[in-house]
Image (cartoon, rainbow, N blue to C red):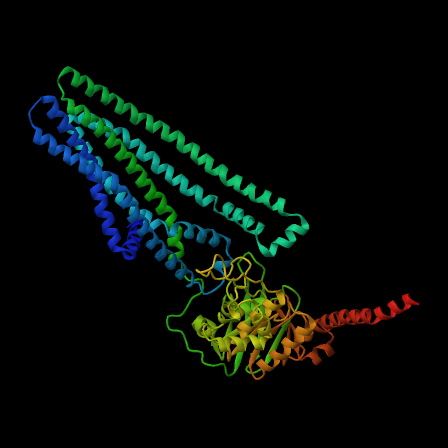
Amino acid sequence: MTARARAVVTALGMAWRAGRGLTIAFAVLSTLMAVLPVTIAWCTKLVLDEIAAGRPGVGVTAGLGAVLAGCGVLTALGPQIVQYVRDESGRRIGLAAQDRLFRATERFVGLARFEDPAFHDRIRMAQQHGGATPGMVVSAALGTARTAMTGAGFLVSLVTISPWMAALVLGAAVPSLAAELWLSRRRAAMLWGIGPVERRELFFGELLVNVRAAKELRLFGTGAHLRGLMNAYRRAANAERSRTDRRELGVQAVTGTTAALAAGGGLLWVLVSAANGTGAIGDVALFVAAVAGVQAAVSGLVVELVTVHQQVLLFGHYLAVLHAEPDLPVPARPRRTGPLRRGIELKDVWFRYSPGHPWALRGLTLTIPYGTAVALVGRNGAGKSTVVKLLCRMYDPERGSILWDGIDLREVDPAELRARIGAVFQDYMEYDMTAAENIGLGDLAALDDRGRIEAAARRAGVHGVVSRLPRGYDTMLSRVFGGLVDPAEDGPTDVGVHLSGGQWQRVALARAYLRGERDLLILDEPSSGLDAEAEHEIHQGLREHRRGRTSLLISHRLGAVRDADHIVVLDGGQVAEQGTHTELLARGGIYARLFALQAEGYRQREDHTAAAPHDRLSGAR
């Protein structure tokens, strides 16, 4: 079976599972709508022949008239019923397809796919077309069957009048079908080609209304510049679409003219035959209806086949995501880790994000003993955040190994490993959800446990802030979405609230506290957005929380890690030096220089603060 055939079968299977009853009803209605035009044409011919012959067949004529009236009612009501069934089926299929797509993305246990621009283009195409394609394929498949049945009926009718005329009309439609299939391939290729351009346009469009970007856009006056870039990408995409539309217009004009000439020639022949007495008056009516029916059926067949063809090509992106190999191997029989007892070891770890990237870690070897606090420090780009990603198994080392109590992380189920880790990331998330949900996402088992959520907020020092919000823990923390709508009120019962950077950081810290007794606590710049007083308070609480626990601390503020049991200085992806705070200061290396620079900065600020009152007094004298 070819890839396209498999795509069609997959789409039809999804539609069948999403709504079998609707699919059957759609098929029955499609069959009924297929036979109606042919029935009307033949009844019209027979009525005209009865009238032209002057036979006293009042009962026959009345009966045919009644059939025509019934067909007219069905023709009027049928499309609306078919449309409802199609839409309802499409909604159910779309929901099932969307769920299946995002369930598939959960199989990507690492970060590599989500940091790949090509994957973002593919997932966007999958979102746009994956949910709609199964419904459209079902609709197009049944539409193809319907138009084929109608066309066959009219073609048989044409054969009864003139076999060679039937062949002429049908032959004129073949180039149209071939041309439309060729055009559909070109259009699908065009849509894939402009995908990155449209994604870039979407980025600028979202940026222009983004709350976080609004301050800089207005202060720097960059709105018009970004709008110009957005419009440039739209013009580039529009130009490609216009080229495709012009090509389609030219091809369709040629094929349409060919079909019209064939029909016109046939009509002239049947009129001459009727005028000469070699044909019946009813034949004229039947011929006109049959030619129009065959051409409409061929045209509809072309449209349905092109729709299926194009949707199947686009559906390929959906299937590519659905059937993509996992980005990280998960063992069929993973080893159980158990609670951490000895510690974590990184042995000769080499890692880079792709073959085109430089090495982020170069033979890194270090140990995080059980029950101790190890700090990672170093300049930007030294490899600190990369170590965190590897410990959480967002990536695997290219060479070397990471051991949890002697077990290689590659032999462990990533979900089980991550269940044993609590973390505050430097680039923590700000969810457009309620305050309780923002904290509760740290441990889904506690999502509905308000007592645990409030306890975690208190430890993070954010309970007071949240309690004073308009709806307390049920307040929406967002400027994008408002509050819940009360049906008894005219509008929202409350307005979304946006916290300050420091308050958000405390919420993220509360998420980590909610995870409770985890084996490894990772704190990646947990106080970078806080003032000095708040930072001191947070670190006091963290010191108590991590006492006796295994923890990894990362901070550019060396004063925040000076009490760690062991400090590791990274430089260029390697361990440059390690030891306690006192030992590293005595060594006079990188750590000592960085600490001295930061201490000098604090001393200068203190000297300036101390001198300010004296200067003011001097000025007063």
